[in-house]
View 1 (cartoon, rainbow, N blue to C red):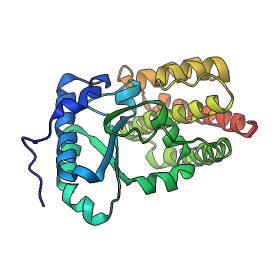
View 2 (view 1 turned 180 degrees about the vertical axis):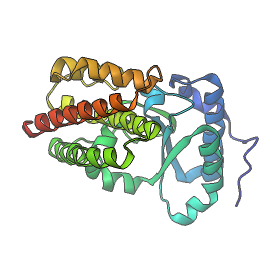
View 3 (view 1 turned 45 degrees about the horizontal axis):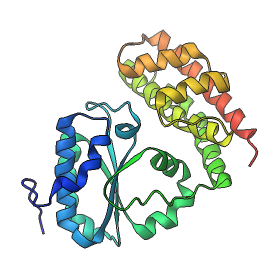
View 4 (view 1 turned 90 degrees about the vertical axis):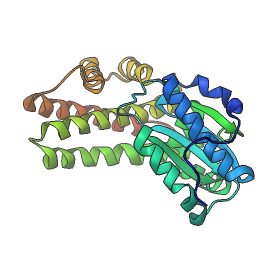
Amino acid sequence: MLLSMTNPMTDTSTLTSIDQLKVSDELRKDLAEFVSHLIEFYKGDLLSVTAFGSAVAGGYSETSSDLNLLVIYSDLNIADLKGVAKLAQHWLKKRRFMPRFLSARNLANSARYFQIDLMEMRDAHVVLYGQDMLAEVKLCRSDLHWQLSHEIKRMRMRIKQQFWRTAGDAPVMQDILIHRFSSLLHLTRVLLYLEGKPASSSPEAVAEAAVTELGIDVAFVRQMQALKSGELKLKEDDQVNAFSRLMDTVRLVDERVDQVAV
């Protein structure tokens, strides 16, 4: 069954919570259309559609950000996804809608292995349709700490490799710096949570807490924020220096993670 990409029959009045998203009215309209298609197509099997990430927490960019969605079904297999693939591909290209399709059982069985992702979803999400499947998500301190340790050490190992592979290619190096800094903020938020400190879902608030609570260099944070916003372009020598400061910051966070009591 192929679903038409225009004129969904579902009543969009059930999607009133879409107004809570920090995006443009035009994007809300397109998202409502996409969600309405999902509801129409899957009917009783669809349990929940939830938005999470920067569209909820702030910092969303319509030119560079994905709009993350968690789409939960009572049951789901590959054959079921074949029917919605064309629709999802259309909206991925047009609006960077990035749905994660899961069954309720898959979500429950995977929770302990994706604690960081689920923490971020749980703390900054908007239910667009159906049940709040994230409300019951439990965070386990030991599982969260293990995943945090794994991710920060993995980042620490990869930065040098990414540097030598891209050295001299200024646009690529800049993209890596932005991506790694954003990922580091996500991990820093988890560290703050484990240390019992304020852990806002706002990237700006996390950056401020990283400076005040962890002693991260404020000049480096401001430089990365300007780079991410497009206000700053770095020359090659400055990029080398930025990579060095990024590595120092990752090392600082890694050492702090090792000191957390679990």
